[in-house]
Length: 477
Image (cartoon, rainbow, N blue to C red; front, side, top):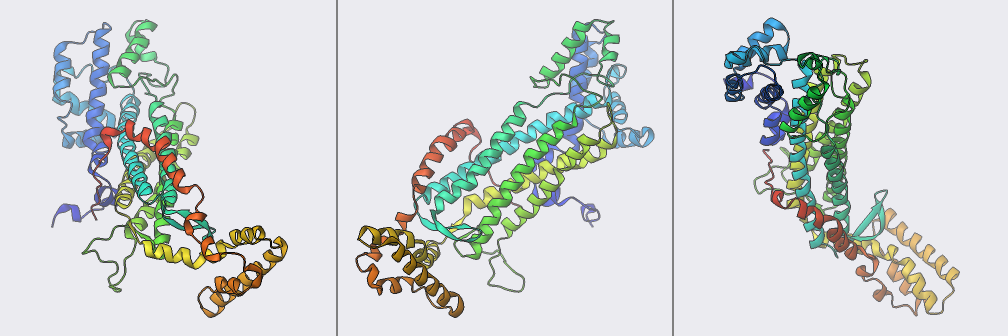
C-alpha cells in the first residue's frame, strides 16, 4: 500500500489548497530560502571586508536547492536543533564555506527572515485570487444590475433591491480585504541582521566596532532579499505583532467568504441562485434529487477554521517574554502556514462559485410577486393621497387589509389577496394599483449604484491586476 495512505495528512495540504501555496510552505522552499539568506549574508560580509572567498560563495550559490533532507534529519536527531542541522547539511554540500556559514547570526536570522519572505509571496498569491474574485463578482453584478429581487433584513422580506446590487455588497467586502492585504504587504518589515537579542553585538564585533558597516550590512542583505523596510528594533525575533496583524487580515478574508457563501446557501434554499452543480455530481448518497451547496458549505467550514486559527498568533504575540521565549516556535509552525493555506483554499472555492453561479429569474420574480403587494403599500398610500384621499384613513385601511391578507397566507396557506382587497375598497378606487406594482419602481438607484461601484472601485483594481486576471480556479474535489 502507498505510504501516503498510512499516515495523517492535513486536509488543507491534501485536499483543498492550491499547488502554488502548498509549495510556498513546503520544506524545499523554506530551507532553500535559509540557504539564500546565508549566502546573501556572506556576500555582504565579504563586500564589507571580511575574509570570505569567491570559492566559498560559489559553492553556496551552487547548492541553494541541493538539500539532503535525510542528512538534515540525522543532524537534527543529534543536535536537537533544526538550524544547526541545516547549517551542517549546507556545509556538507558546500565544504569550502563550512567555516563562514551563519557567521555572526542567530537562528532567527534565517527563521524569521525566511518566514517574512515566504509570507510576502503568499500574500501575492492571495492578492491575485482576491482580484479575480472581485472581477468575477463585478461581471455577475453587471449582468444582473437591474433584475429586481427581494431584499431581506433579519431574513425577513424588506424592500426590493437587484441581484446585481446584492453582488456588489459581496464584492465590496473582498475589496476591503484586498486593500487590507495590500497595506500589510507594503508595510511588511524584514527582521534584518540583528543578532542574538537584537543588539547587533556579534556583527559589531566582526567589524571591529564599525557601526557604519553593521548598518550597511543589514541594508545590503535586506535589499538582496527584495525588502525595502527593516524592523527598526527587534529582540531575538521580529515582533510577533507582525504575524498577528497579517493573520487578522487573513481572518477578514475568512469573514467575507463566510458571508458570501452563507448568502448563496440561503438563496439556494429559496431556489433563486445556486452554486455550480456538475452533470455527474451527487448531492446526497440517499436522496438522489438533492443539489446540496457543498462548495459553499466547505468554504464556510474552512473559513471558520481560518478565523479561529488566526487568533493564535495574537496570543503568541501577547505571550512573548522580554526579548523572546521559545513557545512561539511550535505554534507558528502550525498557525501561519495553516492560515495561509486555509485562505488560499476558501478563495479558490469562492472564485469557482462566483464564476459559475446559476440564477433562476422566474423564481426570483415569483418571490418578488408574492411580497410586492405588501412592499407597495407605501406607494399605494402616496398615490391615494395624491388622488385626494385622507392619509390617516388610507393608512388604517392598508393596515387592516395587510393584516387580513397576512393571516390568510400564514394560517391557511392561501395566496396573497391584498391587491384584490384594495381594489374592492372604494377608498382606493382612484388609484391605478396595477401601475404602481412595477417592480422596477421599487429598486431605487440600485442599477446605477452597480455601475458607479464598478466604475469607481472595481475598474482601478482590474487595471492594477490586469496581468493576474483570468486565474485558473483550482477545485480538486
